[in-house]
Image 1 (tube, rainbow, N blue to C red):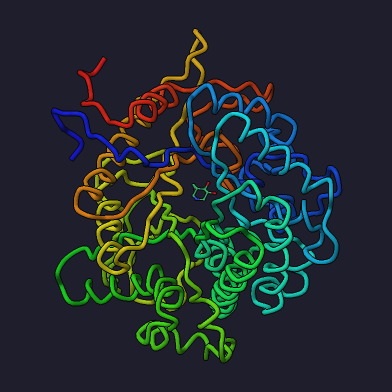
Image 2: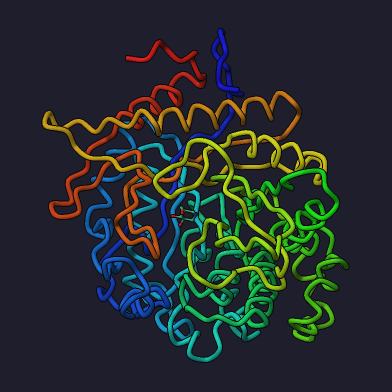
Amino acid sequence: MTDHAQPLVFPADFLWGAATAAYQIEGAAGEDGRTPSIWDTFSRTPGKVRNGDTGDIATDHYHRFREDIALMAELGLPAYRFSIAWPRVRPGGSGPANKAGLDFYDRLVDGLLEHGITPVATLYHWDLPQELEDAGGWTDRSTARRFAEYAALVAGRLGDRVGAWTTLNEPWCSAFLGYGSGVHAPGRTDPAAALAAHHHLLFAHGLAVGALRAELPAGARVSLTLNLAAVRPRSDDPADREAARRIDGLANRIFLDPVFHARYPADVLADTAGVTDWSFVRDGDLAEIARPVDALGINYYTPTVVAADDPADPAPRQDGHGGERSPWPADQGIRFLPADGERTAMGWPVDADGLYELLTRLRDDLPGLPLLITENGAAYDDYSDPSGAVRDPERIAYLRAHLTAVHRAIAAGAPVRGYFVWSLLDNFEWAYGYGKRFGIVHVDFASQRRTPKDSARWYAEVVRTGELRPAGPPA
Ligand code: IFM
């Protein structure tokens, strides 16, 4: 549903922006006291990242951040969501702060504010200090305490200028891709470890909310970003619906219930009883995890379609995350299906209705909680044409469809307060390396030249006017 004859007008105070993450753009991996994270180790392990790519240089944002801020200002972006590299500001994950690391974020925040751009900081976008992984990583409870200390330290330095904070980005990926299927760092493949990591990540979130509130001025907003799934059964058949219930439990309710209701869902505990006894959950943890937040960040790309497996007709895995092992603990008997229709360069189906479904579900399940789209976007095989332009009509169509879905959800009463396109720049796309381009700004990785794609100009106009105009006839 992307056709509309009239402009779709967004609320006047809607927060528009673009998002990035430290390891994906900064580079300068060994500079100014930064120590390795699990992604440095993982990307240097042969066979883990396509083409042997690493984040050593990435988009060199550490040295070019002023140019990138100027670019955002030129595009008229009111807000910028970035992440802070834990191993840059607290090398090794514990012990004293690294002044040079904190100074970088200080300069970044000051530069943004000088250009009138609102900084939105994420504390953890997957770059766990390697020393902490060596001591057990997210399967170890003490990592949560180190995270809260790190959160306090960063808030103490930036909290006078940064008013919007996110603890974790997509803990599902950290736990289930990092410790379950192993396609993300640290590359462990143990479903019990994935569930322990999941719990300790949420515990870290709760401790960090407390630490941030103690450090930040009143009025600062603290949130968590989840990549919740729009889960659909293939059919109304009870077996397909049962598959959808189980994946909804492991993708959505395993986060929403503890964070907003201080409990784990009974059906998920039962479904995973063969994997773990959940003895890592201690008295008081759930109360900590459920500390109130001011908003929920949603990252959405594509829906998840599931069905009951047919043993007579085994199908290859299609859960969109790559890898040979399942990231989902206890998913025996469930088949992941490719949705029909158009796909992005990731192979992810384009389906904006999933975003509408998710937002209206959250409207109903968490009444009144402000929602932010903290990531949404698409990878395409973009290139600079002979005139130097980067034409990306598919990305414009993708963004248009998803913004239409956001507008529709707002009209239906979902309290969506902002939208951040993923991503500002082409960058290091984790296990896919530099081969997948999500940016609205093209980066030539050899020269580090930035070129706004057509989608950047299109998005700038949406942001400037606060409205989505009807699509013109195809060129
Ligand atoms: O690039 C990632 C980002 O780091 C987290 N969310 C999904 C994006 C696209 O895969």
